[in-house]
Length: 103
Image 1 (cartoon, helix red, strand yellow):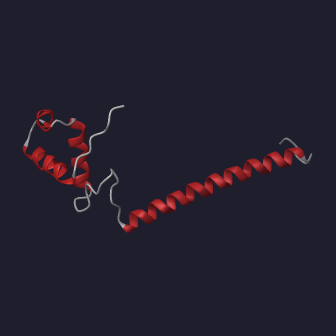
Image 2 (cartoon, helix red, strand yellow; image 1 turned 60 degrees about the vertical axis):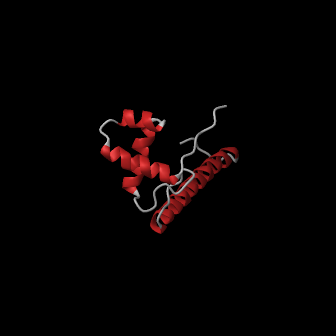
Image 3 (cartoon, one colour; image 1 turned 180 degrees about the horizontal axis):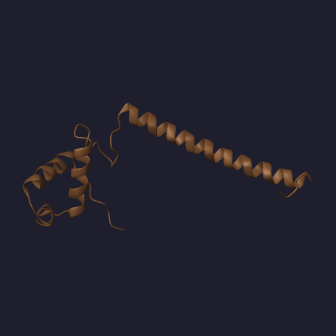
């Protein structure tokens, strides 16, 4: 199995800075011995979160607002799943007690 290479924060920042001065990302990627897609991804991350980019382990640091939004979205998904399961259970039990009319 091929082991994934990990790049430190300084290397990523250096690659992003070099990419701003290079016209051809293919050549730059070859010089740095990385895939060009990494340069594009690192630039996007640096543009989106300039203060907290490259926080480590591929996880983008989130603001408190973003964390709360993600938590609420997860809570909503869980509640919707629970609701769907209960709907199915009601349907199953109403069929078995003979009160189901089939409408």
